[in-house]
Each structure stands twice: as structure tokens, then as C-alpha cells.
Image 1 (cartoon, helix red, strand yellow):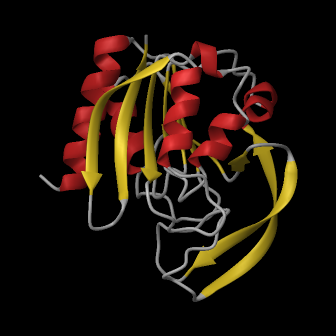
Image 2 (tube, rainbow, N blue to C red):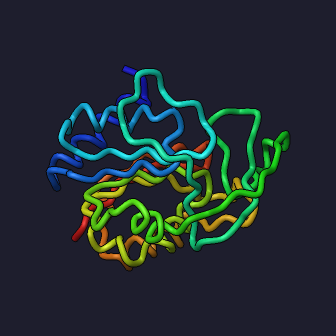
Amino acid sequence: MTPHAQDTEIWVDWIRKVCDPSIYLDIGAGDGFDCGEVQKAFPGCRCIAIEPHEEWYEGLSVEMHRDVIGAANDYRVFYVKQVAGIHGLYSRRDKPNETVRALPVRALDHFCEREGIKSIDAMKIDVEGAAWDVLAGAEGIIPTVQAIHVETEWITLFDEQRLEPEVFGLLSHYGMRKVWENRVEDLGQGDSIWVRQ
């Protein structure tokens, strides 16, 4: 089992512990693998993959959107790297080869309103330095969320990003508590799972 699949299995187990999801969002879904695995585990769930740039995983049968999610509705520079999986709203310092695009950004509250989503049971946020932005634009919908899987950084990998203490502070403010963590010390980056208290 690859580490990617192992983390996904842990995430699916935590979702199962806290809810029987009817709505799942994967923000920064990459190729959509995780979203597809959640769909397999919960066949009746509306699974939504949100990814502005990557190629979708072959055979993916989830709802797919090419949106950029951020703190507010706006147009922002979006950095596209030559390395897959690290595209985002912030420029990554150690990967300078990039193209930039001006793209519309939607707050998660606005995205949910547009798509008729009244509540979210679980969501994953893997947005390359912009986790705080996603959460800041979710003030209206976040009280409905039972479980969140989030990638954060405790050293600055992306110019102007908000670091882990601020992201964790916002999650705590929203009534979530951390139940699992996988830190990659040499990268300064990690994943954690939060559930509603």
C-alpha cells in the first residue's frame, strides 16, 4: 500500500466514525484519487472534486469542478508549476519555473450557494499554502462540517501564505478538534484530521 493510499484509508475511517456523509468536498483534489476512494466507500454520497489544473484520475466517477477556492470572490494570480500537484494561489519558493494565470476565485460559501450545497459532512483541503484562505471563505458553511482533512505548512514554502498555527487557530475557532496528524518534518508540511467537538 502506498503512503498516499494509506492516508486515504485513515481519512475514510475517520469519516465513517463521525458521520454517514451525503456531501463530501475535496478542495485541491489533484487527480481526484482521494475523492474517488471516498465515493467507493460511501456510494450514496455526493462527492465533489474541485481542482483548477490537474488531469483527472482515469475512471473517476465523481462530480468535478475547475474552480479556485479562496478567501473571497475575486480574480487572483494562480501559479502553475512544471511539477504536478503544487499549483496554487501562492508562488512556491523552491520551484521557480512557473506560469501565471489570472483566474476567478470563489469563497467556499459562494461556491456552495452556486451549487445548491446547504451542508458539507466532510471535506479535504490540499491547496498548497492556501488552507487558511479556504477556511476564511467558509464562515457560513463551516458549522455544518463534521470532519476536515487539511494539509498545512509550519515553515514558509509559499510566498505570503498563512502558516499552520493560524490555520489550526481558525479550525479551533470553528469548533473543530485535531484527532490525527502526519507530519513530514524534513518538508515542513503535514496533514491532519479535525472533527467537530
